[in-house]
Image 1 (cartoon, rainbow, N blue to C red):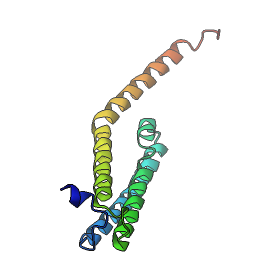
Image 2 (tube, one colour):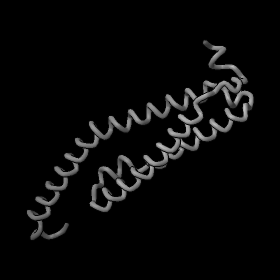
Image 3 (cartoon, rainbow, N blue to C red):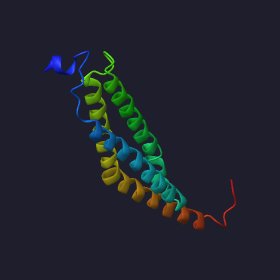
Image 4 (tube, one colour):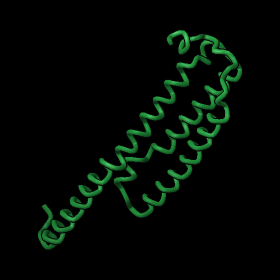
Length: 136
């Protein structure tokens, strides 16, 4: 198993070029879609979404660029850089990142949004109550 993952020259038996290209295209398209969703949410003054997901589209592009780089290295069979472990580690990193973002969207984002709305209503009540008091 270790010789399979850490083989310095894995050879030309890599038959997943089309699947990897599809993943890269999916990451780029996902980045474009998330950038548009982000712009719409920010335009509608969703400050919690702005805070939580500002870097997500760019990071998806970084993963796509990393996969392109690894795919080119694998195609050219460059020793040490085309090792299978790099592709597996990048894939595990992508899955971990997507899982964390999904967790944030379904668990953290609703709580933060409710917290923000509660703070906003408390501030508006305080402002209306203290409107006629002199500033100190």
